[in-house]
Length: 254
Ligand code: NDP
Ligand code: 8X3
Figure (cartoon, rainbow, N blue to C red):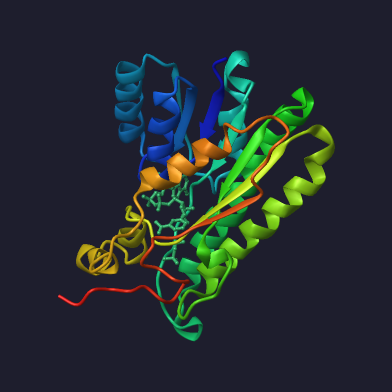
């Protein structure tokens, strides 16, 4: 049976890869993000490649009113959301905490914690009412370990780790599955955003080793979403083979 998947942050990286992974398997997808042009291009491409239905919702996850209005505006048949992938998120800056920018901290907290809550707040009642659903939160190795200069980003991902557990506890009686996928280094636009458009610095993060690809995470999300009804993956920590933990990446010198 065709399912309905809502993916936040589907314009790039992991979220976009999830849209293609689930789309290739004929699920119908609600793609969201701020960049409308990209959303429309991805919608047309998904429809023509896979013959699926795609619905675009353009909103900033930090805007609680826009989140509420957008999700409420879905046609009734699109409100039967089977899987929510809470993926939209970002790191901004990489500094000692005493040198951090308050605006950067607020962007991360507002997007990674509050944004995830705003979206979930609208979708969770739709799932509990139907007594079915699966929430997949994209956490991070940064939610398992705190690494130098990672401070507030790590704190936001520790919050995702905690909220994942909380969702599972509070919705267990409704049969809702809740999974966290926590990746190590994945080559996406993540570091371009973190370094505020310094693409040379961003590229250097992934030099000298083979990072994960966004498709690797989409593949894992798809696996988690296709287990029998009685099986749930609570937590999945996925690293590139060259990455031992948050701080140790084996890089070949060149
Ligand atoms: P990208 O920068 O490639 O993608 C981020 C996505 O989030 C974009 O689609 C962007 O859409 C969306 N987004 C960001 N801010 C907002 C906002 N305020 N409102 C709506 N959408 C927003 O990075 P990744 O794919 O790597 O990141 C996806 C998730 O994976 C994040 O939660 C990140 O923390 C996590 N992660 C990434 C890792 C990595 O190494 N890359 C490792 C571990 C976790 P738009 O700009 O169009 O709004
Ligand atoms: C992204 C992974 O460790 O590079 O969450 O910040 S890390």
